[in-house]
Image (cartoon, rainbow, N blue to C red):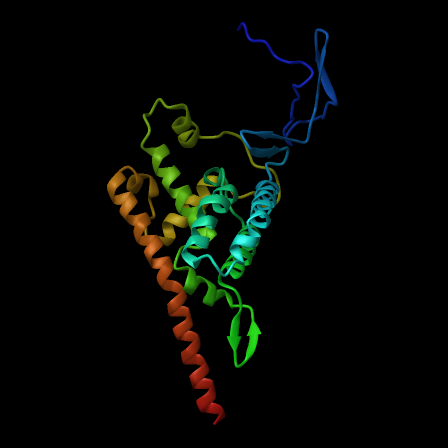
Length: 255
């Protein structure tokens, strides 16, 4: 093909389905050693296709950015809206880089939520409750934030990317990979989450059981996603109202 490769820097990664693992293989005078993971275009790719490892790496990199801006986030001389812009511009893109191609498990969602709330607590600060300072509760944070949380932000981006793929030309390689039928059987045990399974589940929660047909209409698909973001912002205040009702009922019963 007329290509030249650097034999000293080139490695190879064997999939888990391989019957045997080679330490290296040889082509002429070059030995290409096997690795368990490598970084490609900023994303971590490993043998078991474990997305949790990539998410931990994203959190670590975003955490470095957070500590670099920690003084600004805790400053009393910056408006809160400016602090939120710093988070959305400098930290959230690092945290969500490449997330359109990953499926999130419940544990992944929990880890991402914990990290985001740590930043929001630094932005909004503590609360003086009956002359005692305490950290803000989760619902208080998102009520003040007035934006979608990081998990919703990632899932909406996944749905946008899914709609972009399904609207591609039929001969497009990316679209052919999505619609192709994979032959063979999956391994024994609990199957891993697939990307399209996550897209189908998220679209079902929005009321679309056939996301492929719905995503072909670009305008209606974007309106659906914008509506989903608006509904998410309304969830937290509704939860607070329900909690207040329960507290009032409990107080009345005790009295």
